[in-house]
Image (tube, rainbow over all chains, first blue to last red; front, side, top):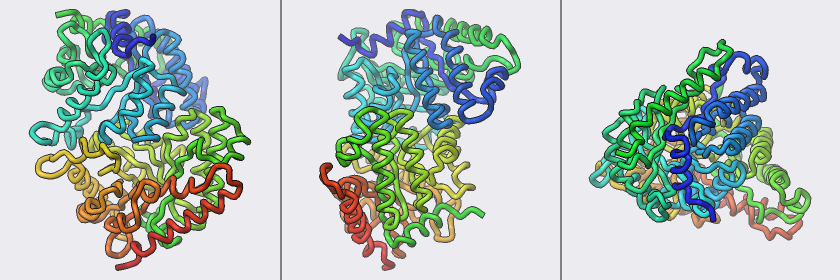
Length: 293
Length: 293
């Protein structure tokens, strides 16, 4: 029988004793110069450079974390070559035993949402995908139909951390902010199908720029995993994200992209050492908040 | 100087004297049997079949309509082969002089949104793309920065027509439904940069299952193009969409996908005749509502 997504995620976190998730957001101008020179600045060259860079990062962080989150947009920007690179990156991550959350923020309905489910789960073989809630449960259902029996999961945007996030997400809707209404819906979807760890397969994305909000949303999302982006380079600290965890230290994964991927100067030769050091420090910094309290 | 997107769209509508937009939503089990047999039921075979089918549809509808809307999800479901097919379809549409609105409902922020802008406008060369508003203006801005100077456009989801659309979109937010708040934001973004036709380059997507809502949203969206999906097979009629147009007969495009693409039985040989007839009828049916009133 296929394991429940929440239990697979809990196992991935426990195995490395850290809630750190490494975001794979390759950017051409931050890549090591040697990699850029080897592949050249064409669309295909960039795609191959992204593939090589991400593969080498995966080899470094594989023993240190349990989860990675490739950002689809950076690969899509390079067209079919970029998508082919993304495929290779996901395959390598899975071969290393890492759980893969595709950050794609997909959203559509009916047979169109089914097509996205095919793209993400059948073709790319990701373990989970981020989704936008604006279209309602209809837009979640077709992906859930495919994810749930296969031990895969979904993460629905609840409250993002960009400066303008509040424009719609914080509007007062029938007594509470819109994002709290969305969180209640996510919680009900998650609670439909719990794993042994007591968490479900529909999680929430909640930015960490408002630590108090995180604590409040943890209450609403009592059975849902919370994916917290914005750790490290975007300004969040371990103390800021503590509120996202349950008292048993489970329930959240914390993503760092730039902080782990690009701690080095592009001219440096042994950049992998710096990535390893950054990943090790970020993973370590989260240990106190994930220890059972 | 590059023409403003709103004027390009107005010209495309005027040239064929119809507000009809043909949605390119290829589905394997509805394709003509001969095309399916020729390419075979593998991922690459399906992608090539989609490409052939869409190319032949474009050749048929090219003289009858000014705008097409490929649905990205159906191509993405086939991985890199599907994306390569989408590229060919967009290129052929543009060569036929058609305006291409990519239905991809993208949404993200900052450099990630810039990457989506590269994917849609630089790589795929679409004329416009659909976006989800949940992340706020930050998620629109990077795409607008690329679209605006290049005479391209954006369409932001306001009110969709799926049964569960109201779950969030109809919540009462500070006195009015969420989708009306979103419509007001879209109107303000559109009004920033008007074309000669008096319309802007940020449009709205409003489903046509609620004709009264369409009329009300036309008032809010006084300077914005409205893209109305759900015409034809999804149940909408010409009378249902009339409210989306301004009194001068401009301001809306009406999408039909299945009704135009798949009016035939897959075993029929001269399916192109049926596509032509369906496109001609759908285009014709919209003429009374686009005539100046």
